[in-house]
Length: 566
Image (cartoon, rainbow, N blue to C red; front, side, top):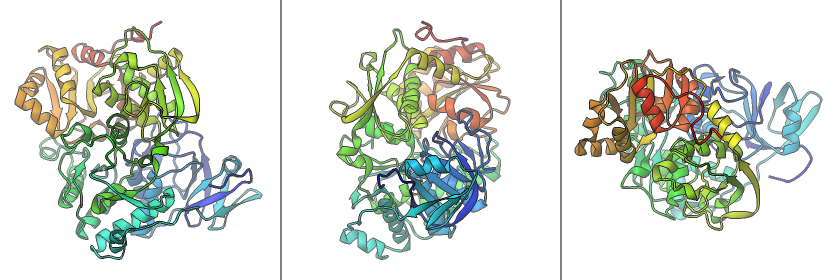
C-alpha cells in the first residue's frame, strides 16, 4: 500500500454501499465472534459485544481467530444480515475470501477496502458514509479510492490449463478464486503444496453447506492428500444422541460432501497428531487456526492461514499463493515478547501465555523469550498455539530455545514488549468469569492427544465423578482408536468420562452439550475465550488438575493458582 499521510482508500473488492459506521481498534473473529443468525457480536471479551453489524460499514484493523470466519461472512451476506461494507487498515484474508466467494459464486457484491492510517483515523470518527468504486464520502470530506497494488501473476502452463477449464468447471472455479486471492496478497506466482487440511467442513452456517454441495455436484475432487477438521456432529451417532435433524442432517451432509470430494474422514482439529503430519520445511495448504500455527511454529512446516473455502481450492489444484509465511522473510519475528517465567508453573501457564502473546502481538509474528526453562511439552505447545490463534491474526510464533526456527528469526526492526505477572493475573481473572459451582468439565479444544487422555485417566485414578458433573473429552478418531486398543478408553469410561469423536468444543451444541449446565470448566485457553459466546454459559479456566478437582467435587478452585499468587 502507498505510504502517505494523505487519506487514501484502496479497493480490495469493488462495489457501492452506504450505512452507519461501526469502528473498533480491536480485531474480531467472525466465527465465535458474530452470530450468523442475528448479525450480533457475541464475543464477550470484545468492546463491541452486543452490537448488531447488519447494514453497517464495519471498520477494524483486521480479523483474528478462526479461519471459519469466511463462512460466517458468506452466510451473513447471503441472508442479508451482514455489513454493507468491510474496511480494514491491515492486510486481511479470511472474511475477504468470504466476500470474494459471495461475489464470484453467488453474485452478491460486498465492498472490501483497506485504508491507510490517516484515512482510517478520519473515517472512524464519522457517523455514516457512502462508498463507490471511486470514493468514500462522509460528513463533509471525501477519501479517494485507489485500485489495489497487485503484482502480475506468473502462471505455469498447468495453472493456465486449469484456469481455462481444461480440468473441468469445478477446478476452473477453484483456480479463479486462487488467482484472485493471490492477487490480493501480492503473490507473483503459485507453488505446489503436498497436502491440505479442510476447515470448511464445520457447519458454522448454511453457507458452508451451500458452497460444499455446489462444488461437489460440479464434480470437484481433491488432487492431493487432504484431511478434514472436526465437524459439528458425531457423524455416526448424532441421531441417537438426540441432535435435532434440523441441525444434525445438514451438518452430516456437509461432512459427506467433503468425503465425496475425496477428503479423508479424519474429523480432527489436531491433524498434527496424525501419522501424516508434515515435516520441517514442507509446504502444505492447511486451514484451521490452531493447526496452522502449530504446523508453522512447532513442526517448522509452511502454510498460510488459509480461509475456509480457499482450503478446498488448494486441495483441488495442489497449488497455493506464494506469499506470507511461505517466504523466508515473512517468517521473521517483528515483535519480541519477554516473559518472566514464574516458579512452580503448571500446565495452565502455557495457554495463558499463548492468549496473552496474541493480545500483545495481534498483527505480527512474535518471538517469545524466557520460556525455555519451563520445558514445554508437545501438548503444552499445542495449548499455547491454540490460545495464541484466538487473540492474534498471525499465522505463527517463535519461542526462543524451543521452536525450530527461533534462532536468528527476530527482524532487525523488531520492537519489544513484556508479559508481566500483572498481565498473567489479569488474564486469569478475565478467563474465570463463572461462579464456583461447575456442572461440566470440557477437555479437547483442540482435540486431546493420547498423552493427554493418559494424564486424565491417571489423575482420576479410577475415582468416580461428582454426580452433578459431566466430563466430556473430544478427540480424533485416530486417538480414540489407540485409546480403545490400549484399554485407556475403558478406564476413562469407568470413571464416568464421555469421549466423543468427530466434533470439538467449539462446535458442540445441545443436547450433546448438557442442557442443565450453568458453568463450564476447561483447561483450554481457546475455549475459555469462545465458550461464553458459543454456549451462552459462564466459563472457568484452569489446569488439568484443577479440572479434575472440579469434576470430583463439583466446584472450581477459588482465587489464583500458587504460581500466580505472589
